[in-house]
Length: 256
Image (tube, rainbow, N blue to C red; front, side, top):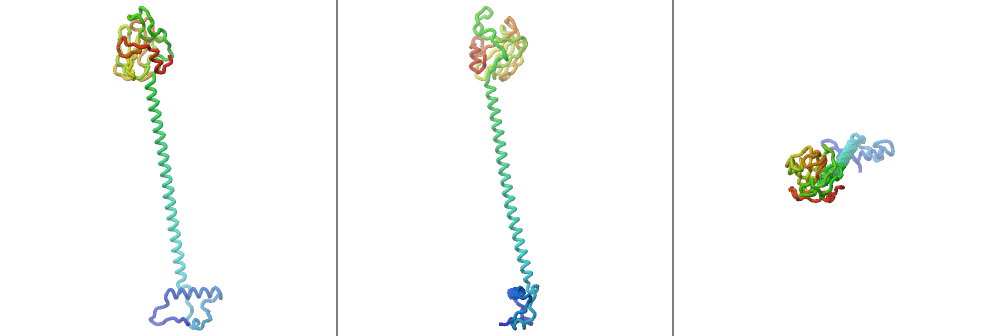
């Protein structure tokens, strides 16, 4: 069957036909090196075989290559976008975990600080650092109106710093008769402590004090034979409610 080209007003060969001819020509070129020199007389009788440019094969191949390139670029961009999103997600998760760890560390530090402060406020200590008892509790003698010592005396030269043994609120600060300048503190556990014969007072009634806070200076005011600190522990703020101050301090962890 011979292939002939339509003439006149009839349409030229379809794209499929052109492509078929182009492919046949390329195949022949690959084997003989000559385009369009087929043995078929009918084909030879036709006009000169269309070139690659006439067949549109170049345009089709280029279009296909461009389409493949665009698709590959789009796929690469999509992969890059997915990978970038994954990296950002991982970075955000790492930041979240780091922030959570930092927050937990901060909260732990705050809890530790609160606990340390709670323990400090609940602690007790000597009213005169490094001192010792020079006159014991219930020591008898004419020096005391009750006939015995209602507290203990801590050795202290005049002007030595006197501190609150624990946390509490000052309920008396001033002249106390035989006690001279004295301070009475209601402790956080409901008991009371008294500090007598002071040469100076550093706190006022209603003031809150903490363990180790300076409240005055030791002296020899009132009924005293020399500089020292008279210290009492009481169940109430009133005279006569005294309790053993050594047992009181030891029960609260003070080494005395």
